[in-house]
Image 1 (cartoon, helix red, strand yellow):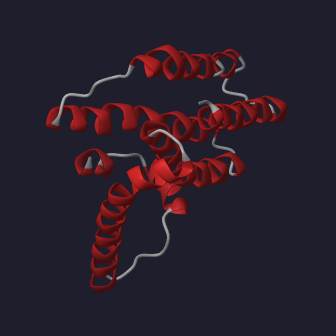
Image 2 (image 1 turned 120 degrees about the vertical axis):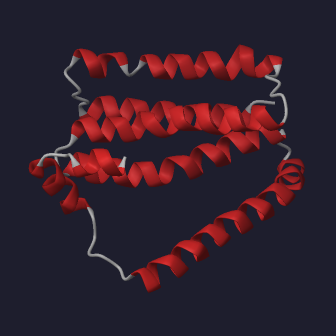
Image 3 (image 1 turned 135 degrees about the vertical axis):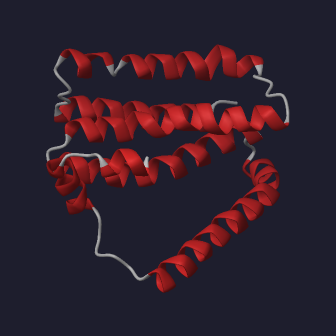
Length: 173
């Protein structure tokens, strides 16, 4: 990636330079990165220890709680970046930020977990969540047909679908 970045055209480098904040000194950046990594690992440990008891207390199944929490946590950084990209007129980047994290999550996270322990897809997931997500993915087809244009009302429909899906997951018993 470093070699490819060095071969980039100057206009591409200038476009990315707009997004990059001023350089932070290495002596400050490294401790901040390590603190962020420690917080990430510590938060994961705490979350894994309390997820099952929290699911029981809320009367949710652990997979449902995991789906809702993981989806929300993964979506927030991408949402912020996608909104910024859309406001700056970079529709292709906004769409990539909407789709990319989900694909990375499915491929990287699920693949890594399956390497450690076989992943068993429950029957209810195969019958409910996977078809629902395929239907929501189908909502991306008009985006490609319209030349990567998503109108506000279409965005509202997609956001409503997300809220409806989460409510369906939470309220389903």
